Length: 201
Image (cartoon, rainbow, N blue to C red):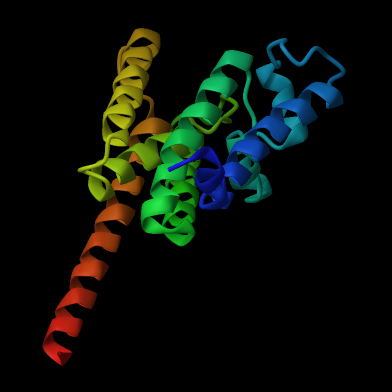
């Protein structure tokens, strides 16, 4: 499949990729700093990142917006690129609705878990949603070549978490679990549809 067809069949994946880049560029412009400089985590709530105050202020929109904000340029670039590769593959094979469901439910679940477990910290980034999409790939694209890339992303994320906190971050774990659950529900739904079609025929 040529690149033109890939882009035409992956509009939502492209949109998510662009939103992550836009979040980074917008933050850099807002704070009047270089596009390559690290963002200051404590300042990111000004542009939509989330903290434990969420449970007091009830600004639930932050759970979505925070997924498109990052502290480090390379982290943002890795998340955006990895997410595009995995999301575009899922969208082409399973459709945009499945992709969005896994991304939004997994990413939001991960953000909630992150805020719940670490209320004093600023939660942001697409890593939670990326872990959800990796889980979706493992379930829904078991025979696809991209499964190896998804496995590599998960392994790398686990290694970084263990190095940083001697364990797996709650947001990543719950994001992956949510992505896994949503994907299994889609599999079960597909089986029921096939069973009904077989019965009716």
